[in-house]
Image (cartoon, rainbow, N blue to C red; front, side, top):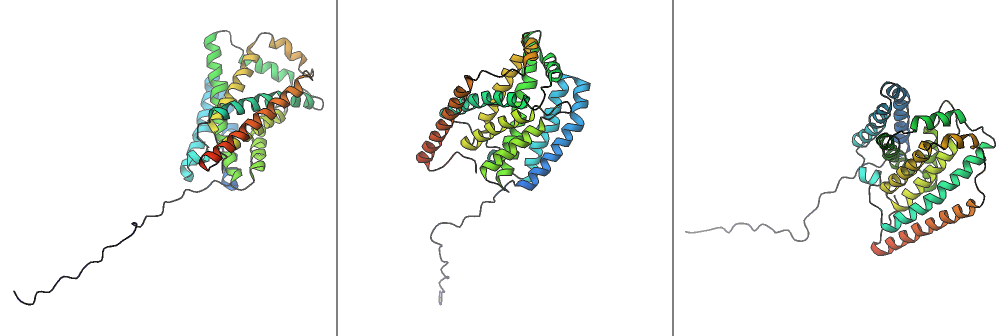
Length: 292
């Protein structure tokens, strides 16, 4: 053969192969969050009472799941928001559980003093409390477990998804962490207002501050769900006790003042444990568990 022509050499690329940019999910901000709050509040206001009147306790369960939880998950899905990041779905460390429980225990006792101080200017709705106690009282173990599921466990999950999950994340997207915790707590307290009384607003908002602060410090919504559920269960156990009917008549009595420094000490101790654990986690892997 004559005049053979050597094929052109194809240059071989060197170095790392080019990578495609990873698409980032949108970050929840204040505007969509406020719109979400209005929608779920409207749904629950218009549909919650009829469902409970029609189905009783089962209506309460249906209202929480169908009118609150399902729209929340649909909102995250349609908005393209990362559920793990938005809802802070990470398990807490052992020290975070201990610190959060101690902080919440002290803070919940402070809510008792807050409710008493409020009673000096706002009358205690005794008829409303007695009606609640009667409705929640159980005459059998099976009935108590059902009420515990419907009125303690499910609300703890659903309300944490909404208020310390979506609302806190949305407020945090536009505000500082402190204002985000306070804003979500105010919305939480307002959600528990009733036509009969506004008495529940202040203590409930304070519990919202406690739970929001714990989620902000630990980055763990499951921890807030646990503490919220235990708090609800204890309230139900007290409300179900026969002696509660007699105690309601003395609801305006001041709590023991010697309990106040103990509550403050527990609150301070739990806060220190959470701060130390956060610093330890930062030093260990260079990251923070605080939600961003």
